[in-house]
Image (cartoon, rainbow, N blue to C red):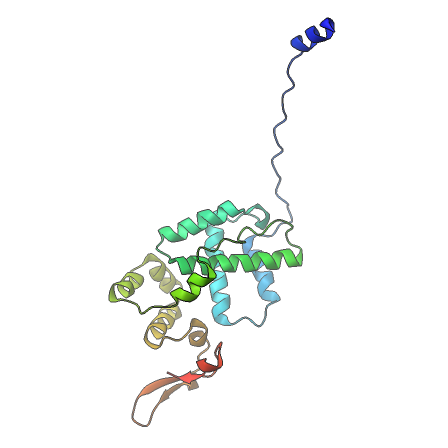
Length: 212
């Protein structure tokens, strides 16, 4: 027994092995590639939804430096939320963007593009009750000025002139973005008294079919 104890004392400690660093799956999709597959199987999406998804995923991909989808974690989503907040995105807007990421990852899991957890799951900043209670308020003059002078607006306007037109139409009419982007020439009318108005034929709700 004494010999065994002595042997244990002189025995060199066994060094713990460092955890293996996970290797990237060479077949893993990038965010942009996943988005195109999503669009391929979601032909019924409105143009407004397509634009919203593309803008959000492009922004996220650029922020994270375009990693494979299997490398994106919940902490990356946290950093993205903070990044959006620093750019003066509202809490509601941040939640809307995270919901896009969540929907895209749900699609990826369903289609077998990833087996990992959804990094955007349970990341909403507002509760359902808060979202319903908050609703939408009237823009103040200072808020409108802040939006039109923001870096995001100038950046989007430079990319697509139609973006600025859609924003102004939304500001003056209160129409949803999907209603505006689906407008056709014959929907712009003039009444007998000379008043310009728009006929909305397709909306999310029956009450949304109206003249503005």
